[in-house]
Image (cartoon, rainbow, N blue to C red; front, side, top):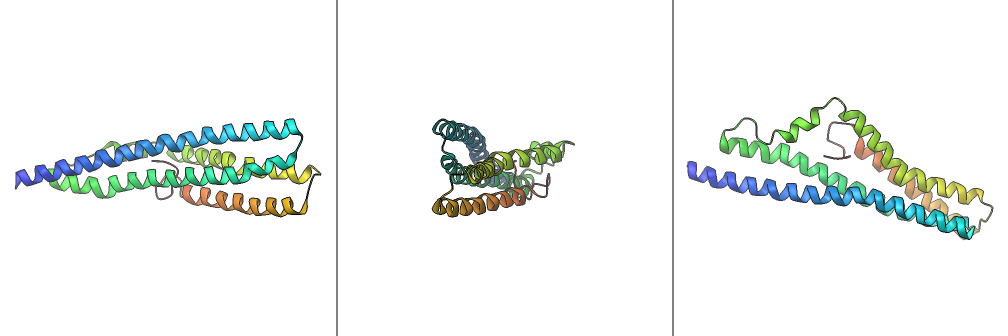
Amino acid sequence: MAEQDMGEGQLLLAEYQSVKDEQKARIGFRDNLLYVTLAVVAAVIAAAAQARQTSMLLALPPVCVVLGWTYLVNDEKISAIGRYVRGELTPRLAAVTGAVDVFGWETFHRGDARRTSRKIVQCVVDLLAFCVVPLAALIVYWGGGQLSSGLLVLSLVEAVGVVGLGVFVVLYAVPFGTGTGGAGV
């Protein structure tokens, strides 16, 4: 029986390593999406300013929504992996090994006193990067005096998309710090 438990324990450790590798890859990808968003925003703003065409700013909302949604989905998967490790793998490995403190870091790092404030700040950063910036671009377009009916309709659809993304950013982040939403590990 002990040999069977060792084999099961090794399988659980291999699964842990596999999901942690996926989590690490997703964290790197997710974090780079913020940099990509900043680069795209800077490029579009520079091009629009140089061309003196506020209509070029209409490129920002769809790009920010796509990048923001991709960021959010990856963030949720990162959190789901953490929940899986804490709720599934840890108890199974503890039962097999008889150890009390299995994968202690998975719960320890979540108990720090500043976790909630970090989650709130991250939610604000996500909203700024993926929602406030494209909404500001739309406001500049609307106030720029170069409105056409087709682009105005497009801009209104884009505004709905950006606001929808903002709702999801907040929903995934709440409740802050409990891990049932998103916003990280």
